[in-house]
Image 1 (tube, one colour):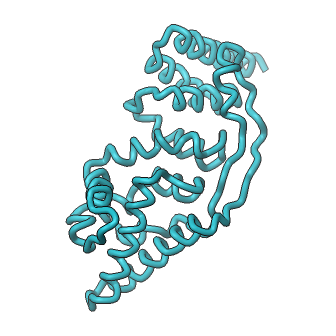
Image 2 (cartoon, helix red, strand yellow; image 1 turned 90 degrees about the vertical axis):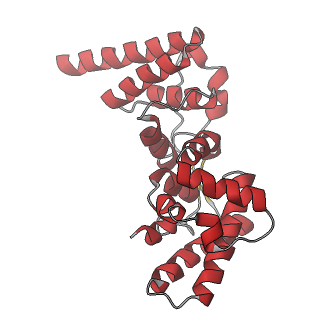
Length: 232
């Protein structure tokens, strides 16, 4: 019991430190304190702090931010759409993935071939991105640029699957099916709403974080089978 009490006080101290650093505008330091608190225990206060920091546009250079973004999207810790901008920024920070999205945005609405859109490394990079999985599985939309990319990816993979007789055709078929599911799920809005317990918001930023009231959106039609199949 004594050790639990000490752990609880340590977590409260880290959350208080993060709140104080937010008030001083030291957001990167606040994120470090928040991550330390989450590593101790993923309490409602720590989760709310993390979401608040993400919404403030904190730098995403902390290597644990990606890990906790995936957790926040999957549980969820808030309305998942609030986490899309930060997630999208991290996804695009991968050079190969970012280049794929830039090609799609520059070309839109003109179609691109598989090679022109993905290059030599893009498809594998997309398939290996766990954060991309979490965004596509748990948010109803990922932004206009990404929707344009998904549309062109679907066209390119369908065209390639229909025209090629390559040995990896079964992989193409699974990939095409996944992208089609994503496009269908987005257009028909057949998402399921999950309502997690509202986290306790520390007083230091209660008013600012009111936008983190919980309402997670999940899209069961599009699962982890999407582009990951092409990375094997």
